[in-house]
Amino acid sequence: HANIDGFVYHVPGRLSIDSIRELRRKREDIEKYLSLPTILLPEINAMWLKMLDQTLWLTKKLQLEGYHVDNISDILNRLLKSGRKNYIKLFWNSSMNKLNNAVIFEYDIKDTTSSSTNIVAASIVPWIFNKSMLNKIWTMMKNDLLVYRRISFNNKWKPFGIITRTTGSRVFKGDEEYHGYVVWPRDIPYLIELARILNEKEFIGDVLLNYLDASISESTIFHARELYALPEGKNPYPTETSANPIPVKNPSQSWSIFIDLYIKFKDIIKEKLEQLI
Image 1 (spheres, rainbow, N blue to C red):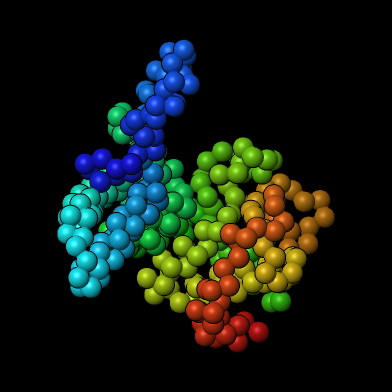
Image 2: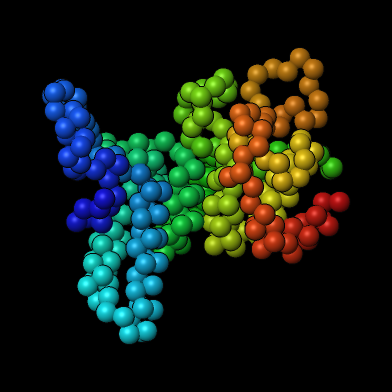
């Protein structure tokens, strides 16, 4: 739920009656649950603001059709105005030129880990940021998160995806590294959207062509991996592709497939393909 500041809290401020009854004999559990800190996430609150903005647009359309939704519009306007005002104040880290990965509200603790949540948030609500902020997020992405891959048909290194978070081990061993130094293909649409906003056409073509090449050369078309790990370690028998990101976890993941982007940017991909061949 949202409070007066317009933010979505990670833990709700009230429990249902059933939940209280279930825990009424476990006083320590109740106290522990109620004392959990309020953790605010930039991408979740970006989605919240996007929802408010789109719902407000819908209420305006309904008003034009004669529906009485004035009270709803007023509530949405207040929440959106408050959220826009406080989002940058809470999440933007001016000393590091990026969004905080998370904020623990009560203790003013800020997690400054570089993460893909910057890209997700900026692509969802770009109107929250000024152009300078968007450029700084883009620079952080290229310096801290961007992973390259060698395209199979011409051996050229091109952008492939972004690391989820720069934390933990760089070697993927299992679920402990699931949200660390790995590439989630599901983040690519957000990356492409931010590239579109910043008019990075060449980058769009490179990433989409590279990802399509990975799908075809490493498995089959439209059969996408869940994660890609970094090629850390010394390969005793290296080949031209040994330094490429390594597919791990689920071999076929629906959220890793985004056909619509290839339709939307087909002209850019075609031009890039002609340049590479």
